[in-house]
Length: 412
Picture 1 (cartoon, helix red, strand yellow):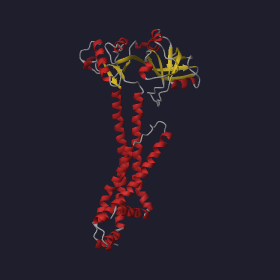
Picture 2 (picture 1 turned 180 degrees about the horizontal axis):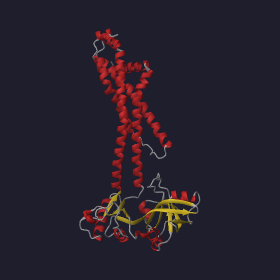
Picture 3 (picture 1 turned 135 degrees about the vertical axis):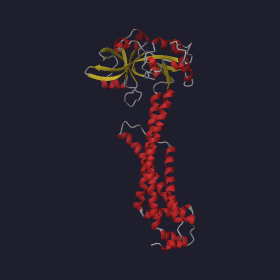
Picture 4 (picture 1 turned 180 degrees about the vertical axis):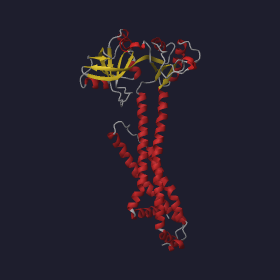
Protein backbone atom coordinates (compact mmCIF):
# COMPACT_ATOMS: atom_id res chain seq x y z
CA UNK A 1 0.00 0.00 0.00
CA UNK A 2 1.34 3.42 -0.93
CA UNK A 3 1.49 6.47 1.37
CA UNK A 4 -1.19 8.22 -0.71
CA UNK A 5 -3.50 5.24 -0.42
CA UNK A 6 -2.89 5.22 3.35
CA UNK A 7 -3.70 8.94 3.52
CA UNK A 8 -6.92 8.41 1.56
CA UNK A 9 -8.02 5.67 3.94
CA UNK A 10 -7.03 7.82 6.95
CA UNK A 11 -9.10 10.79 5.72
CA UNK A 12 -12.09 8.56 5.01
CA UNK A 13 -11.81 7.02 8.47
CA UNK A 14 -11.62 10.40 10.17
CA UNK A 15 -14.50 11.86 8.14
CA UNK A 16 -16.73 8.93 9.03
CA UNK A 17 -16.45 9.94 12.72
CA UNK A 18 -16.05 13.71 12.51
CA UNK A 19 -17.02 14.59 16.08
CA UNK A 20 -14.88 11.87 17.62
CA UNK A 21 -11.92 12.86 15.43
CA UNK A 22 -12.30 16.52 16.39
CA UNK A 23 -12.45 15.73 20.10
CA UNK A 24 -9.41 13.45 19.78
CA UNK A 25 -7.43 16.19 18.05
CA UNK A 26 -8.39 18.66 20.78
CA UNK A 27 -5.75 17.37 23.20
CA UNK A 28 -2.93 17.74 20.66
CA UNK A 29 -4.31 21.09 19.51
CA UNK A 30 -4.31 22.51 23.05
CA UNK A 31 -0.88 21.06 23.79
CA UNK A 32 0.78 22.46 20.67
CA UNK A 33 -0.84 25.90 21.01
CA UNK A 34 0.30 25.99 24.67
CA UNK A 35 3.85 25.04 23.68
CA UNK A 36 3.94 27.70 20.95
CA UNK A 37 2.54 30.40 23.24
CA UNK A 38 4.51 29.63 26.42
CA UNK A 39 7.84 29.10 24.67
CA UNK A 40 7.17 32.34 22.78
CA UNK A 41 6.51 34.16 26.07
CA UNK A 42 9.74 32.75 27.50
CA UNK A 43 11.71 33.89 24.43
CA UNK A 44 10.01 37.30 24.59
CA UNK A 45 10.98 37.70 28.25
CA UNK A 46 14.57 36.80 27.37
CA UNK A 47 14.70 39.38 24.56
CA UNK A 48 13.15 42.07 26.79
CA UNK A 49 15.68 41.44 29.56
CA UNK A 50 18.60 41.52 27.12
CA UNK A 51 17.39 44.78 25.57
CA UNK A 52 16.99 46.34 29.00
CA UNK A 53 20.49 45.29 30.08
CA UNK A 54 22.05 46.51 26.83
CA UNK A 55 20.25 49.85 27.18
CA UNK A 56 22.15 50.49 30.43
CA UNK A 57 25.16 51.52 28.40
CA UNK A 58 27.71 50.28 25.91
CA UNK A 59 30.73 48.27 27.05
CA UNK A 60 29.77 48.94 30.64
CA UNK A 61 31.44 47.71 33.80
CA UNK A 62 29.88 48.39 37.18
CA UNK A 63 32.01 48.54 40.32
CA UNK A 64 30.21 47.84 43.61
CA UNK A 65 31.53 48.28 47.15
CA UNK A 66 32.64 45.26 49.11
CA UNK A 67 30.76 42.18 50.07
CA UNK A 68 33.90 40.15 50.60
CA UNK A 69 35.16 41.27 53.96
CA UNK A 70 33.48 41.91 57.26
CA UNK A 71 34.41 42.17 60.89
CA UNK A 72 35.25 38.78 62.41
CA UNK A 73 35.07 37.10 59.02
CA UNK A 74 31.37 37.89 58.63
CA UNK A 75 30.51 38.51 54.99
CA UNK A 76 28.53 41.65 54.27
CA UNK A 77 25.65 41.98 51.82
CA UNK A 78 26.37 42.79 48.20
CA UNK A 79 26.98 46.51 47.72
CA UNK A 80 26.65 47.38 51.39
CA UNK A 81 30.23 48.55 51.88
CA UNK A 82 31.49 52.11 51.64
CA UNK A 83 34.93 51.54 50.16
CA UNK A 84 34.61 53.59 46.96
CA UNK A 85 35.42 57.29 46.71
CA UNK A 86 35.53 60.04 44.13
CA UNK A 87 39.34 59.68 44.02
CA UNK A 88 38.86 56.05 42.97
CA UNK A 89 36.76 57.28 40.06
CA UNK A 90 39.45 59.72 38.98
CA UNK A 91 42.15 57.02 39.26
CA UNK A 92 40.13 54.58 37.14
CA UNK A 93 39.55 57.25 34.48
CA UNK A 94 43.30 57.86 34.20
CA UNK A 95 44.24 56.59 30.71
CA UNK A 96 47.84 56.01 31.76
CA UNK A 97 46.90 53.29 34.25
CA UNK A 98 43.72 52.21 32.46
CA UNK A 99 44.30 52.47 28.69
CA UNK A 100 41.19 50.38 27.89
CA UNK A 101 38.88 52.67 29.87
CA UNK A 102 37.15 55.60 28.12
CA UNK A 103 35.83 57.20 31.28
CA UNK A 104 34.34 56.45 34.68
CA UNK A 105 31.52 58.13 36.57
CA UNK A 106 30.38 57.90 40.19
CA UNK A 107 26.83 57.22 41.30
CA UNK A 108 25.11 57.87 44.62
CA UNK A 109 21.44 58.22 45.39
CA UNK A 110 18.27 56.39 46.33
CA UNK A 111 14.56 57.15 46.23
CA UNK A 112 13.42 60.78 46.36
CA UNK A 113 10.08 62.57 46.74
CA UNK A 114 9.51 65.08 43.95
CA UNK A 115 6.99 67.92 44.24
CA UNK A 116 5.76 70.51 41.75
CA UNK A 117 2.70 72.55 42.68
CA UNK A 118 0.18 70.08 44.03
CA UNK A 119 1.73 67.15 42.16
CA UNK A 120 3.87 64.54 43.95
CA UNK A 121 5.95 61.74 42.53
CA UNK A 122 8.43 59.28 44.04
CA UNK A 123 11.35 58.55 41.75
CA UNK A 124 14.88 57.14 41.60
CA UNK A 125 17.50 59.79 42.42
CA UNK A 126 21.02 59.57 40.96
CA UNK A 127 23.89 61.90 41.80
CA UNK A 128 26.63 61.74 39.19
CA UNK A 129 28.87 63.78 36.91
CA UNK A 130 28.66 65.34 33.45
CA UNK A 131 29.59 62.12 31.54
CA UNK A 132 26.48 60.25 32.75
CA UNK A 133 24.55 60.41 29.41
CA UNK A 134 27.37 58.92 27.31
CA UNK A 135 28.29 56.18 29.80
CA UNK A 136 24.70 55.15 30.61
CA UNK A 137 23.42 55.57 27.05
CA UNK A 138 20.92 58.35 27.80
CA UNK A 139 19.91 61.07 25.34
CA UNK A 140 18.63 64.49 26.35
CA UNK A 141 15.42 65.13 24.39
CA UNK A 142 14.97 68.76 25.47
CA UNK A 143 17.15 71.21 27.36
CA UNK A 144 20.70 70.25 28.33
CA UNK A 145 22.61 68.07 30.77
CA UNK A 146 24.59 69.71 33.56
CA UNK A 147 28.25 70.68 33.02
CA UNK A 148 31.43 70.02 34.98
CA UNK A 149 31.19 73.59 36.27
CA UNK A 150 27.74 72.90 37.72
CA UNK A 151 29.13 69.72 39.32
CA UNK A 152 32.02 71.64 40.89
CA UNK A 153 29.65 74.40 42.09
CA UNK A 154 27.12 71.90 43.50
CA UNK A 155 24.40 73.65 41.53
CA UNK A 156 20.78 72.84 42.28
CA UNK A 157 19.95 71.65 38.78
CA UNK A 158 18.28 68.42 37.69
CA UNK A 159 17.55 66.40 34.55
CA UNK A 160 14.44 64.23 34.69
CA UNK A 161 13.16 61.20 32.85
CA UNK A 162 10.00 61.27 30.68
CA UNK A 163 7.98 59.35 33.28
CA UNK A 164 8.71 62.05 35.86
CA UNK A 165 7.89 64.79 33.35
CA UNK A 166 4.50 63.27 32.56
CA UNK A 167 3.52 62.65 36.17
CA UNK A 168 4.63 66.05 37.50
CA UNK A 169 3.97 68.37 34.57
CA UNK A 170 1.46 66.56 32.37
CA UNK A 171 1.82 67.99 28.87
CA UNK A 172 3.67 71.18 29.91
CA UNK A 173 7.37 71.77 29.20
CA UNK A 174 9.27 71.19 32.48
CA UNK A 175 12.56 72.78 31.34
CA UNK A 176 13.19 75.93 33.37
CA UNK A 177 10.66 75.00 36.05
CA UNK A 178 11.63 74.63 39.71
CA UNK A 179 10.57 71.50 41.56
CA UNK A 180 11.30 70.26 45.04
CA UNK A 181 13.46 67.18 45.59
CA UNK A 182 13.09 66.07 49.20
CA UNK A 183 11.93 69.67 49.99
CA UNK A 184 14.94 71.26 48.27
CA UNK A 185 14.37 73.53 45.26
CA UNK A 186 16.03 72.26 42.05
CA UNK A 187 15.75 73.84 38.61
CA UNK A 188 15.01 71.44 35.76
CA UNK A 189 17.46 71.97 32.90
CA UNK A 190 16.70 68.93 30.73
CA UNK A 191 14.47 65.96 30.00
CA UNK A 192 15.79 62.57 28.86
CA UNK A 193 14.46 60.78 25.79
CA UNK A 194 12.50 57.64 26.60
CA UNK A 195 14.45 54.37 26.75
CA UNK A 196 11.25 52.39 26.38
CA UNK A 197 11.32 50.86 29.84
CA UNK A 198 8.30 48.76 30.73
CA UNK A 199 7.88 50.04 34.27
CA UNK A 200 8.63 48.59 37.69
CA UNK A 201 11.44 49.47 40.09
CA UNK A 202 14.06 49.43 37.28
CA UNK A 203 12.20 51.84 35.03
CA UNK A 204 14.99 53.82 33.35
CA UNK A 205 12.52 56.53 32.32
CA UNK A 206 11.53 57.18 35.94
CA UNK A 207 14.70 58.94 37.09
CA UNK A 208 15.95 62.29 38.30
CA UNK A 209 19.67 63.00 37.90
CA UNK A 210 21.54 65.76 39.75
CA UNK A 211 25.23 66.65 40.22
CA UNK A 212 26.76 64.30 42.75
CA UNK A 213 28.07 67.24 44.76
CA UNK A 214 24.52 68.61 45.01
CA UNK A 215 23.23 65.19 46.09
CA UNK A 216 25.86 64.98 48.81
CA UNK A 217 25.28 68.57 49.99
CA UNK A 218 21.47 68.77 49.96
CA UNK A 219 19.81 65.38 49.49
CA UNK A 220 21.72 62.46 50.96
CA UNK A 221 22.03 63.81 54.49
CA UNK A 222 24.14 61.68 56.77
CA UNK A 223 25.36 59.30 54.10
CA UNK A 224 28.60 61.31 53.71
CA UNK A 225 30.44 61.47 50.42
CA UNK A 226 30.46 57.80 49.61
CA UNK A 227 30.16 56.52 46.08
CA UNK A 228 27.64 53.69 45.83
CA UNK A 229 28.63 52.55 42.35
CA UNK A 230 31.21 53.41 39.70
CA UNK A 231 30.20 52.99 36.06
CA UNK A 232 33.16 52.34 33.75
CA UNK A 233 32.96 52.57 29.97
CA UNK A 234 35.49 50.36 28.15
CA UNK A 235 36.87 51.33 24.76
CA UNK A 236 35.06 48.41 23.08
CA UNK A 237 33.13 45.25 23.84
CA UNK A 238 36.28 43.22 23.21
CA UNK A 239 38.22 45.41 25.66
CA UNK A 240 35.92 44.88 28.64
CA UNK A 241 38.03 42.00 29.99
CA UNK A 242 41.22 44.06 29.78
CA UNK A 243 39.43 47.07 31.30
CA UNK A 244 38.16 44.84 34.11
CA UNK A 245 41.75 43.76 34.88
CA UNK A 246 43.02 47.35 34.82
CA UNK A 247 40.23 48.63 37.09
CA UNK A 248 40.83 45.77 39.51
CA UNK A 249 44.54 46.52 39.72
CA UNK A 250 43.96 50.27 40.19
CA UNK A 251 41.55 49.71 43.07
CA UNK A 252 43.72 47.02 44.71
CA UNK A 253 46.69 49.42 44.62
CA UNK A 254 44.67 52.35 45.96
CA UNK A 255 43.10 50.27 48.76
CA UNK A 256 46.44 48.64 49.65
CA UNK A 257 45.11 45.11 49.15
CA UNK A 258 47.65 42.50 47.97
CA UNK A 259 45.31 39.50 47.84
CA UNK A 260 42.57 39.91 45.15
CA UNK A 261 40.34 37.44 47.02
CA UNK A 262 40.11 39.99 49.85
CA UNK A 263 39.12 42.85 47.56
CA UNK A 264 36.61 45.28 49.08
CA UNK A 265 34.83 45.75 45.76
CA UNK A 266 33.27 43.72 42.99
CA UNK A 267 33.15 44.36 39.26
CA UNK A 268 30.22 43.26 37.18
CA UNK A 269 30.23 43.42 33.40
CA UNK A 270 27.20 43.57 31.12
CA UNK A 271 28.17 40.16 29.75
CA UNK A 272 28.03 38.73 33.29
CA UNK A 273 24.53 40.13 33.73
CA UNK A 274 23.48 38.94 30.27
CA UNK A 275 24.78 35.43 30.93
CA UNK A 276 22.98 35.28 34.27
CA UNK A 277 19.75 36.61 32.77
CA UNK A 278 20.01 34.22 29.80
CA UNK A 279 20.40 31.25 32.14
CA UNK A 280 17.39 32.34 34.19
CA UNK A 281 15.12 32.95 31.21
CA UNK A 282 16.36 29.73 29.58
CA UNK A 283 15.29 27.73 32.62
CA UNK A 284 11.97 29.60 32.64
CA UNK A 285 11.36 28.82 28.95
CA UNK A 286 12.26 25.17 29.47
CA UNK A 287 9.91 24.92 32.44
CA UNK A 288 7.04 26.53 30.51
CA UNK A 289 7.66 24.22 27.55
CA UNK A 290 7.72 21.17 29.84
CA UNK A 291 4.42 22.18 31.47
CA UNK A 292 2.82 22.58 28.04
CA UNK A 293 4.37 19.29 26.92
CA UNK A 294 2.38 17.42 29.58
CA UNK A 295 -0.83 18.24 27.73
CA UNK A 296 0.74 16.81 24.56
CA UNK A 297 1.32 13.50 26.36
CA UNK A 298 -2.28 13.52 27.57
CA UNK A 299 -3.40 14.18 24.00
CA UNK A 300 -1.26 11.27 22.79
CA UNK A 301 -2.90 8.92 25.28
CA UNK A 302 -6.28 10.08 23.99
CA UNK A 303 -5.20 9.24 20.42
CA UNK A 304 -4.09 5.76 21.49
CA UNK A 305 -7.43 5.10 23.17
CA UNK A 306 -9.39 6.22 20.13
CA UNK A 307 -7.20 4.18 17.79
CA UNK A 308 -7.78 1.08 19.93
CA UNK A 309 -11.53 1.68 19.65
CA UNK A 310 -11.14 2.19 15.90
CA UNK A 311 -9.26 -1.10 15.50
CA UNK A 312 -12.00 -2.91 17.44
CA UNK A 313 -14.76 -1.31 15.36
CA UNK A 314 -13.02 -2.13 12.07
CA UNK A 315 -11.95 -5.67 12.86
CA UNK A 316 -14.11 -7.18 10.11
CA UNK A 317 -12.76 -4.61 7.63
CA UNK A 318 -9.22 -5.66 8.59
CA UNK A 319 -10.18 -9.32 8.10
CA UNK A 320 -11.63 -8.63 4.62
CA UNK A 321 -8.53 -6.66 3.59
CA UNK A 322 -6.25 -9.46 4.73
CA UNK A 323 -8.43 -12.07 3.04
CA UNK A 324 -8.04 -10.32 -0.34
CA UNK A 325 -4.26 -10.01 -0.02
CA UNK A 326 -3.34 -7.11 2.28
CA UNK A 327 -0.07 -7.78 4.04
CA UNK A 328 0.66 -7.25 7.73
CA UNK A 329 2.78 -4.14 7.02
CA UNK A 330 -0.08 -2.68 4.92
CA UNK A 331 -2.45 -2.80 7.92
CA UNK A 332 0.29 -1.47 10.21
CA UNK A 333 1.00 1.44 7.83
CA UNK A 334 -2.70 2.22 7.39
CA UNK A 335 -3.36 2.74 11.09
CA UNK A 336 -0.03 4.47 11.71
CA UNK A 337 -0.81 6.98 8.94
CA UNK A 338 -4.28 7.53 10.39
CA UNK A 339 -2.84 8.15 13.86
CA UNK A 340 -0.07 10.47 12.59
CA UNK A 341 -2.52 12.34 10.32
CA UNK A 342 -4.83 12.90 13.28
CA UNK A 343 -2.07 14.25 15.54
CA UNK A 344 -0.38 16.19 12.73
CA UNK A 345 -3.62 17.95 11.80
CA UNK A 346 -4.18 18.79 15.48
CA UNK A 347 -0.61 20.12 15.66
CA UNK A 348 -1.04 22.32 12.60
CA UNK A 349 -4.26 23.81 13.99
CA UNK A 350 -2.54 24.26 17.37
CA UNK A 351 0.27 26.25 15.73
CA UNK A 352 -2.25 28.59 14.10
CA UNK A 353 -4.09 29.10 17.40
CA UNK A 354 -0.78 29.61 19.23
CA UNK A 355 0.16 32.34 16.72
CA UNK A 356 -3.23 33.99 17.22
CA UNK A 357 -2.97 33.94 21.00
CA UNK A 358 0.58 35.35 20.80
CA UNK A 359 -0.84 38.34 18.91
CA UNK A 360 -3.89 38.91 21.09
CA UNK A 361 -2.65 38.30 24.64
CA UNK A 362 -0.11 41.20 24.78
CA UNK A 363 -2.97 43.54 23.78
CA UNK A 364 -5.10 42.26 26.66
CA UNK A 365 -2.29 42.00 29.24
CA UNK A 366 0.05 44.98 28.90
CA UNK A 367 2.64 43.60 31.37
CA UNK A 368 3.10 40.41 29.33
CA UNK A 369 6.31 40.45 27.24
CA UNK A 370 5.67 40.27 23.52
CA UNK A 371 6.00 36.57 22.59
CA UNK A 372 8.81 35.77 20.18
CA UNK A 373 7.95 32.69 18.11
CA UNK A 374 10.92 31.29 16.24
CA UNK A 375 10.73 29.12 13.13
CA UNK A 376 12.63 26.22 14.77
CA UNK A 377 10.13 26.14 17.63
CA UNK A 378 7.24 25.90 15.13
CA UNK A 379 8.85 22.99 13.25
CA UNK A 380 9.75 21.36 16.57
CA UNK A 381 6.15 21.62 17.83
CA UNK A 382 4.78 20.17 14.59
CA UNK A 383 7.37 17.40 14.55
CA UNK A 384 6.60 16.47 18.17
CA UNK A 385 2.87 16.34 17.43
CA UNK A 386 3.46 13.97 14.48
CA UNK A 387 5.91 11.96 16.60
CA UNK A 388 3.30 11.60 19.33
CA UNK A 389 0.89 10.19 16.74
CA UNK A 390 3.56 7.70 15.66
CA UNK A 391 4.47 6.68 19.22
CA UNK A 392 0.96 6.35 20.62
CA UNK A 393 -0.42 4.85 17.38
CA UNK A 394 2.17 2.11 17.23
CA UNK A 395 0.48 -0.23 19.70
CA UNK A 396 -3.04 -0.05 18.16
CA UNK A 397 -1.59 -0.37 14.62
CA UNK A 398 0.52 -3.37 15.61
CA UNK A 399 -2.50 -4.94 17.29
CA UNK A 400 -4.51 -4.52 14.09
CA UNK A 401 -1.68 -5.89 11.94
CA UNK A 402 -1.39 -9.04 14.06
CA UNK A 403 -5.07 -10.00 13.69
CA UNK A 404 -5.65 -13.31 11.94
CA UNK A 405 -8.00 -13.02 8.92
CA UNK A 406 -10.36 -15.86 10.01
CA UNK A 407 -10.69 -14.56 13.58
CA UNK A 408 -11.21 -11.03 12.27
CA UNK A 409 -13.96 -12.13 9.86
CA UNK A 410 -15.71 -14.01 12.67
CA UNK A 411 -15.62 -10.94 14.96
CA UNK A 412 -19.08 -9.65 15.82
